[in-house]
Image (tube, rainbow, N blue to C red; front, side, top):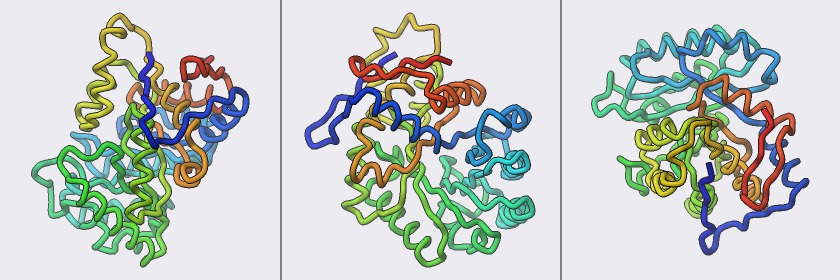
Length: 316
């Protein structure tokens, strides 16, 4: 599958330098984080020996799970020697007590990372409606959470205007400056590397200095990618995906959009982009096992760079 990202005027130029680019891709991928759901807790032991102990594994708070479920999965990840980063989704937390209990459990296991997300529930489960509500409690710092991720939206948010998005990022940056917490942005996935690169310019223009962990959809079926693109409201990328449907309707294997997006991002990752985009974060839409298998191949250099098509040929 090829999801070509046209290069708009003013965007970072794509660099296609063969072997040098391959080394840069390997280096970038070796810093990658991945994610799983609480339901994936049972496979954590299988990842030992496949992923370096330094790998950060995020735990998403999906529907029909509680923050306690998320934290227990995170504790299993930390106990296995990885770095756990549970999602704290403001609108899914039932009460301040539930948050405190979760943080106490995390502290007991030595978890020092968390990703804060507002969540998409129209009616919050409790009193928290935004990530700023969580930060304002001061409970994260008192619980020893020193590394905090927040969401970034290169293609905008389906419910929040751009002005509010920029203001929220500035407020979170100020929180880090005041408390000493290490703040970073985890960007929403998409299929338009050019949009991500242009978004970096917006960050600079609005005085946002936080490092970015660039969100990339890992290998997944076309059906799954479309479903998550619709759920997440990534309009420009969804339009690009739908435009390719006629050529992809007969595909039965895992699509390779992850290969092309990674190729394009690393090609453009120079200068300011190299300083801003510090590592990739892979969404495991096609399953944790498939994502890890693919990531291991990239990290081991088991792929060839294909400049002609702007993608990678991965040897699993």
